[in-house]
Image 1 (cartoon, rainbow over the protein chains, first blue to last red):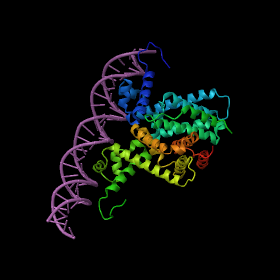
Image 2: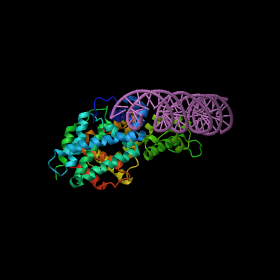
Image 3: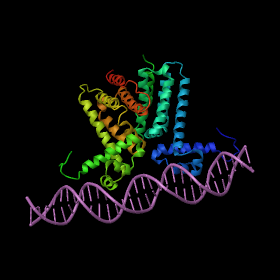
Image 4: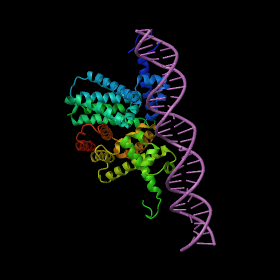
Length: 187
Length: 187
DNA sequence: TGCCAAATACCAACCGACCGGTATCTTTCA
DNA sequence: TGAAAGATACCGGTCGGTTGGTATTTGGCA
């Protein structure tokens, strides 16, 4: 990712910074706070730089979402690599990644952002298609109803974590994780 | 609800119209489409009227969300009234209401709006507190882990329905409903 | 019951702030 | 030196909200 360390300008880093700052703004203050100006200030560049890297604001947001999906995908792939049992492997990885993220980051740094994207119809379509492809790809091993329930519950937990970001503590997440993982093994 | 039919001005109806139009806009075109101007045009009044009924835009949106939660709550109460078994009654009602709504409205007319509210931190807090109170109220009968999983799965289904509003058809919702309801009865 | 002031309901016009986006110029690097 | 990277300055449009006024309704009193 890093270019030669001697160069002063590192456009790749600026691009990343813009995406990261947009993500941070979205999850901390809501999607409405993601203005071009705010993102530029947070990233320490001007609008000229932003519009040099992204054709328009929509492209920036899509960059954020794409980045998010990419991370999610590689996390799931990593979790799957450790699992010898083919049946339900994808579902187990999905559950683990989602719940571990919730436990580690105490409310998940991605949750709010992810949900933010659902508010805009265009981004919703983008996320939905990615998820559909992801599930379709593992249809051979993860198509049974009880596996679907496990994945849905993980999504629900993720939603619940979002809703209680100041409120009381999340009920035992590790127990829930074990319960859902166990659910993928029975029958 | 209706006042005397002869009167020309019926502020209660105008207030309702504003809330309804805001909700409609949000779910059809996303929360970003809910501008004060757009809501007023849809309701056939001017901005003066809107700001007479609501202190600011935030108050209008909160009105929409409050209305939504009220409907949800009364639907759940109605479903609970038909259930003789106390244990898991709330969870069963929750699952039924959520999934029936999804089945009936083919993607749910409320889903998109509900998720839209999650994008804004203030509304997120509002929704979260309502949900927490709702669960707390039924802690005596619905606090067991497998009931929590059922509710989370219902939430997940609701999220999944949102993501596939144009894509492929939802996998068998009525089967999922039966599965989750059955889950509330075992053990 | 009829009347009239006060409160309510609503409208038309307007405002400053800020939005996304562009045009143009300067700096930096290969 | 020429292309890429980024800065500065600016634009038209729209946003949430206000102002000042006009209808309509209501409640108290004769």
